[in-house]
Image 1 (cartoon, rainbow, N blue to C red):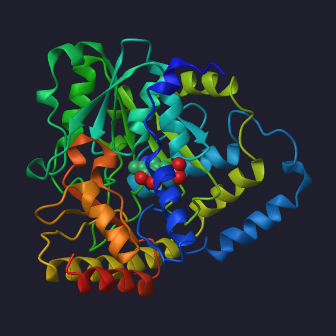
Image 2: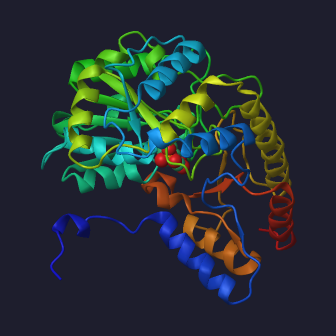
Length: 388
Ligand SMILES: Cc1ncc(COP(=O)(O)O)c(C=O)c1O
């Protein structure tokens, strides 16, 4: 076979590698506890499942869906954004469905990047911020996120030569993997709008975790920032919001020109999304959000459990105010990879190495709070026993 050169540029997908290791260990009879992938262990709320059952049974949903997205879905997203963020969106021109935020991240790169073009990507960051640009034939430039700067990129430190070729930027708050959030009074989004405008760089803000927050913190939308809609879009996802990772639905919202380009791209790639799913997603966004509050409370409890145990182990860690992740520095004498390896080999516990999220993730690992409390407790007990 003669495969394309662009495939050579792709690193192996982090979680594909981790899944392979888990399977290997389980074959050896090890009771593996995965605190790896951020895939909620809890089911989709029953009222959403029941609505999907109704929609699946409706023959009107059985044909090719409209590529543009159903009116119900686009209007529900716009209404959600108005209610939740105070952001006005035109459902006709400023909302488009995604087969999950991941699909949006990968495909939007094709709207912006030609050979030689640069995508500014958060480092550490969701791996597709790097592989998406590579697939599109562009060049990702990692912007380091460090704790001293609140895990926000230093926009002034991007080398002139990269900036001149940059056409898009990926960032994400509440942040995977660091758990960082945009704090009250923080002007980062305003600086981002300014940066996008001055440098003609499209800002792609990934808001996959906006609803997963704790301690009274309410995450903003990037689009709340004056001028944001002129420079970019936001990716919203129902995956973590309603424990719907398997359903594959999200939306890209904001700048109408970008969304029009995205529609053109997508209408040449797939034939839209199952209408039953879009209508059910509209229902989820519109109905009571009590299920989201209950879910956040479960994650908060798990967060506190993990943070308290890590501190007992002498690991410096701050409780995050958002996301489902605890990001912490590995103990002295370890690299990210050697610590993750030791935890897997000696405790049968999977934690992804921070280096898998980009060079600036070296020295960290991430724990995901998406396992039942007793499994998290068991994993921590195994680590404690070995003094890890
Ligand atoms: C930052 C970030 N963006 C996007 C995604 C993918 O979300 P979706 O399930 O909507 O594709 C994830 C999933 O873990 C994520 O962490």
